[in-house]
Length: 403
Ligand SMILES: [Mg+2]
Image (cartoon, rainbow, N blue to C red; front, top):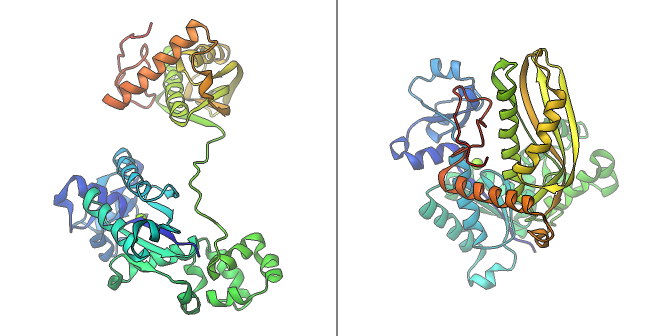
C-alpha cells in the first residue's frame, strides 16, 4: 500500500513575511496581489476577522482598518519554497511540487529506512521545516494523492490534529461515508452538481458505482476518482519536472513609443530573460519570434529558424535584431514587445564547445558568466548597451561590457 504525503505551508506568503519581520507574528496581516489590487494571502487573525480571500484592496482598507497590508514579494516566496523543497528531497527523491507552497511525497517503504512509523516520519518533516526554515506546515498522509489532500485539509481545519492527519487504509470507508463529494480535490461546483443530479452526495456513494456508469458520467476521471478514493493510486507522485514546449516574454512599455533603440533594448531584455531560463532548464531553442504590438493593438510578428539551436542571448540577439529591422516602422507608435522561443530541445552535454567555432564558444562562455554574476549580485546587475526592463520608469544606463 502506497504512503503519499502532502505537505502544505500554512498561509504561505504571510508566513514568509512574518519570517522576515517577526513583529508581524500573531497579527492580522494580508499580502496583496500585483499592483496591490486585492488580498491573496491572510494570516489566521485576518481570516478570523472575516476578511475574504481575493477582496479588493480599496474595500479592505476601508472595512478592515486594523489589518497590516503588504505588497507581494515573489522572489522571497520562491527562495523559501526552494528551501522547503530541498528539505523534502533530503527525505526522498520522489517529490512532486504541486504549487509554490504544496508538494506531494511518496514515502512508501521509508519506514524501514528510517526505522520509525510513517506518523513519526511526517512529524519529523513538519518539525524540521518549522524549526530549521521557520514556516509552519500541515501534512496529510494517505494511500493516494486524493486522500492525502483530504487528510491535509483535515490537518489544517481540525485544531486537535496539530497540523498532521493520517488516513489509514482501514479508516477509508468510514471517512468516505462522512465526506461530501465537493470536499474532494478536483471536484468543482459543476461536477458536484452533475453527481447531485443522480442523488450522489457522499464519497462512499461514488466508490459503490460500477465502472461503466462512472465512465459514462465523468469519463476516465470518474474511474480514477473511484480508484483514488478506494485507496488505490491512479495518479502517482510524479517527480519528473515537465519541460516547457515554448518560452515567451512580453511586456508593455511604460509609455507608448516610436523610439527604435528603446524598443530594440526591450527585445534584448526579453531575450536575456528567455536565455537564462533556457540555461537553467538545460534547454535550447531553434525558432525565435519577435513581436511588436502597436498602440491600436495590431500585432506584427516575424519568425526565424536559427541555423543551429542556441541558448545564448549574444547569438540570438543577432537574429532577433534582423527580424526587428524587418518589422519596425518609424511612423508607428508601439505599446509592447515580446520574444517567443519555440521548438525547444534538451541540450546534449557532448555539444559543449566541441566542433563549434570560436564565436559561438565565446558567446556561450559570456552567457554562463552572466548567469554566475546574476546568481551572485542579483538580476539586472549589469546589461548590454542600454538594455532595460521595458516597464522600468527610469532609463538604466548600462555599461557596454561586451561590445
Ligand atoms: Mg498553503
